Each structure stands twice: as C-alpha cells, then as structure tokens.
Amino acid sequence: MNPVTMTEIIDYSRRHTVGVGMFNIVNMEFARAIFDASQETGLPVMFGIPERFMRNFYSPDCMALICREMIKQAKAPMAIHLDHGKTFDGVMIALRAGFSSVMFDGSSLDYEENVKQTAEIVKIAHSFGVTVEGELGYVGRAGTDELTPDSFTRPDQAEDFVRRTGIDALAVAIGNQHGRYQGIPKLDFERLRAIRERIACGLVLHGGSGIGNEDFKEAIRYGINKINIYTAMDTAAKDFTRNSFGNYASYLDYTKDLTTVVRDVVLEHIKLFASAKTM
Image 1: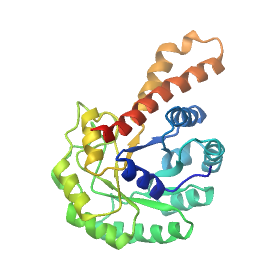
Image 2: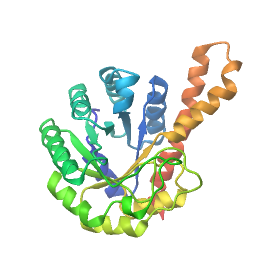
Image 3: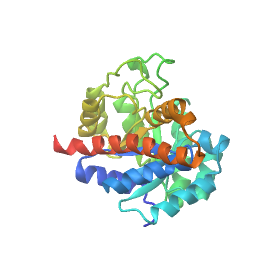
C-alpha cells in the first residue's frame, strides 16, 4: 500500500461517520507505536511530522522513508502529513520528501496574507498530487493563551477562506488549544455547526489531547474529520521514562516497552474516534 492523501482520509471519515487521528512522530518508537495501533484496529491513521520537529530533531526524508516502508505493510489507509508548516520552505521540503498531505498554518498572519500564502501553497501542492490543510482563527497554547470568542474561527470568514484558497481541509478554533489543558475545555459546537453548514471541505480539530470523550464524539457528529493528538503521547512517554527507565538493564528493552506505552495511547484514541458512529 502507498500513502494516501488527506482527501481519502476525509472521505473515509464521512462514509463511516468517524474521526481519524493524526499522531505526531518524535522518533522511531513513536512511528512504530502509531503503525502498530493502526494494524491492531485495522483503522486508518495519519503520521504527523511537524515542521519544527523536522528542522530540529530529524531528517524529513529519513522519517518519511520509514513511514512509507511501514505503510507498504498496512492493513488500512495511512497518510504522511506535514503538521503546522509555518514557512514556504518547510512545505517545499515536505513535498520533496514525499509527504502525501501538508498543512500550511498561516493563522498568525493578517487575514488577506493568510489567504494569499495559503492559496499559493495549494496551487503548488496540488500540482504534486498532495492535499492541503489550512488554519483560520487562533488556537493558541493551553495555560499560556487566554481564549476569547473573538479569536475563534468565524463561519462567514471560513466560507470565504475556503473558496479563495481551494484548501482540502480547514483547522478550526472553537475553544480547543495545543498542549495540556487546565481542566476540560468547552468547545463551541454551535460555531462548529455553522462552519460545517457553510463549507464542504474537511474539518480538523487541533489540540485533541485532554478534550472530553463525549466532546470528541459530538465534534465528529458535527463534522470534524481529522483530530490531532500529540500531548497525550508525550505525557505518557515522559511519565514512563521518569518512573521506569532505571529498572532496565538494556536500552533496547526500554524502547520496546516505551513503544507499547505510546501505542496504547494511540489505540485508545483511534477506538474513541471510531466509536462516534455508534451513537
């Protein structure tokens, strides 16, 4: 099997009324954990490679190659996705490395500049057969940024943004934040409903770690197709390392069990996102 595009992931989400998780890769153990969880469930996932990871921690060509080799053995569709591409150069690096979808995050830009740069990315990426996710509104970071409705995605602006850029998926701000929440966030489902009524492309929920289970299911029923998870995996890996690393005589044994710990987090979320269809 070859990597699929985000459009194929979104189509799967719509056909089955489920959410599909995108899980960020830190290293080989995280990549194997994501793959193993998908294999165990037979459900699709997206490998996520953030621009800041590939600039600071590993080669995007090497990690994309690892993902492609895993996908050859996959039971279900899998995509290789650039998460939070902040720069034109970062997106071009991902395209050359063979990613099957990219995100260009221009949410911090002036609206017209976000439209302009995102539309240019879409034109180039589509010529490679690669799908594009854009972002509108301010998600921010939990514990750092105070959210107000003024920073949320506006339904009328979302309609204009999708029409003028041609994106395949839109990441929305509806009360979600990156990082570790202080308590369970309150998502604005009426805003999400209004956005879905105005646009036909896929919808993405960032900052998934820490959102309540029922809110996940509600978000999927209101039209969310792709959900991003990283902090929950990071937290589980750090806690396991902090509490258990000294018990291992072999580093290889430690990495094997670390992979299992991260796999369990991914598995839990895959099953949760798939359970929305039963409601």
